Image 1: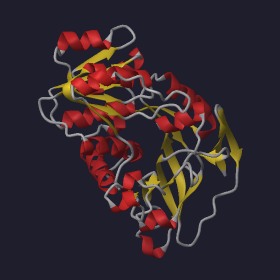
Image 2: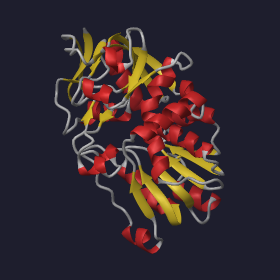
Image 3: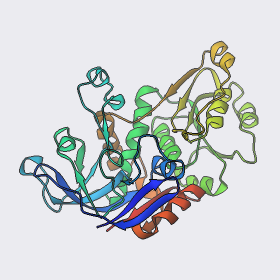
Image 4: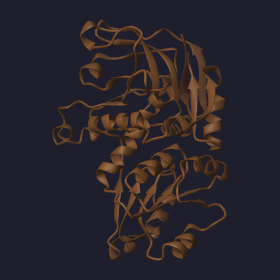
Length: 344
C-alpha cells in the first residue's frame, strides 16, 4: 500500500509498504481523508523525542471499514473516526478522572500506524475502550475529520469556565484558534479578538464572524489591548507554537484573568520568559490545556453534528497523498486553515 513515512525533520517519503497486520479483533480501514494537525507539522519540521523514524503520522481522519469483529458493532462499509489517544484506565491519572493525562497512553501516529496511508488498523484495545465512532450519514467527511481537534478545544472549555459578557483574546488564527473562537462564541462571549501574524490567515478566519481581527505583525497587541480593553482581557488563549506569544499573553490579561497555554512548543524552543511578578501581583492564573477525555470527545461529536463548529469551513486546501510534502509546506506557510490529505 501507499503511505507517507516520516524519517526525521524534513524527511517525509511516499513509499510502498506492507499493509498493517489486522488481528481477528481489530478493525481494518480504508483511509479516505486525513487532515494535517499542528503536531504533525511540528514533527515533520522539528522532529520528536517520542516518535521513531519510519512512522506513519496522521490522526485527524475518516475511514471506511473493510473488516470488523462481530462483537464491535461495526460492519464493512461503515464510516468511522477515532480519538488519537487510548488511555490505560489503570494508572493514577486514569483512576482520578484525568485519563487524558494517562502515563501509559497509546497514540495513533506514534505507537500505532497513523492515517497518512491507504489502510490502517484500529487495534482491539481502542475498540473495547470505546474510542471509535461511527460517522452518521448526516455528517460530512470534512466534519468527521474535525472531531479530533474540536475535542482538544472542548477540553479547554472544561478546565476554564468561559462566561457570557467576557472579553477573550485568542493568539493564533489557525484552525485551533478558530475552533476556540467558535466555542467561546457559543459560550456567549461579548468580544472575541483573534490575533495572528499572517494577514492571509486572518482573512480566512473572518468567515467565522469574530468581533475583531488583529495583525500582530503590524499592530502591537499590548497597544491594541490597552486602547480597547484598558483593564486587560478577561481570558487569553495562546493557540500557537510560540513561547514569545505565551509570554506576551501574560501581559495582556487583566488582574485575576486566565491565560491558557494551548499550543505545544518545538522541542528546541520551549522556554517561556514569563513575567513572574505580574503573575504574582495580578493573581493571574496560567494553565495548560492538553488532549481530552471520552466525555469531551463525545461532546465534540455533538457540537460538530449540531453546527456549533462550522466544520466544513475549515478545510481550505486538499492535496493527494503523493503531494503531502507540498501540503506540509502549505500548512507551514499558514495561508489558509486546515490542509487535508485525500488518501482514497
